[in-house]
Length: 289
Ligand SMILES: [Zn+2]
Ligand SMILES: [Zn+2]
Image (cartoon, rainbow, N blue to C red; front, side, top):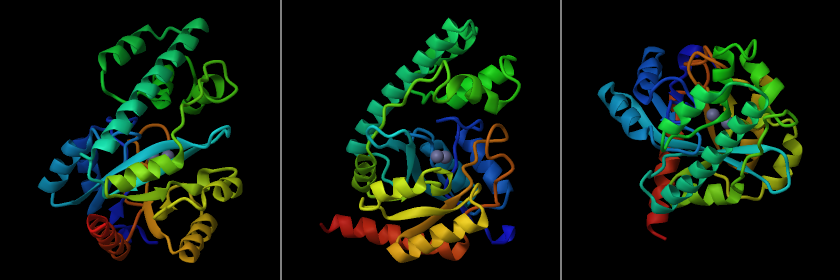
């Protein structure tokens, strides 16, 4: 796909989760990079949606309410991200689910800080920062950026390799939401549910056999870290399964992973239009059930 053909980016993060741009800054950056349609898909929250949609509207961009739910399978060590798009963000069941999830993530973040402290890493300023941020999703990238900025690690990845990832001394496992429950919450909010970045999963074949019978609407075929072979593999899978196709950059701002990505991965105008029509039909069908 040619860069100039990218019309929509349906995978973006803001400061409402672990991105570094505020929702409005993010939308403006997308606008400058030539995107015409965007979805905000913060981890386990829709708190940035109002600000982002207002900015998008002012700029004449199409805005899609989205989310990236962190899911996992019981007793298995992988995190399955589920992208929800075209959501009605005020749906009660979704709001309740996100509240519970937020509390679990907060507790996890503070546990990580406790472990870092026991390793003689001074995280007092970060703890004060976290305590002042009520109602904000706290995640490992925040901690990684703090460790880097304060000289505890040489680069972003080292924060994970030395402290934060599984097997390291400040690792705390996540409390996982079952993917089926994540999909249900997205469907109840009249949205469409997609498997996020399947190419990042080292054990994709096992994952696929575990999740293939869930009521997915689609899969994220176009993704910044998918090489051409992976893109083709997942495109074919979507075709065989008659799944919808999504795509986006997973942009978090110009720091950490996925930098310099905006406007390079996503959907063409035609594919975005097809997806929008499918979303509308699915929501209408639900209204008639
Ligand atoms: Zn993800
Ligand atoms: Zn993401």
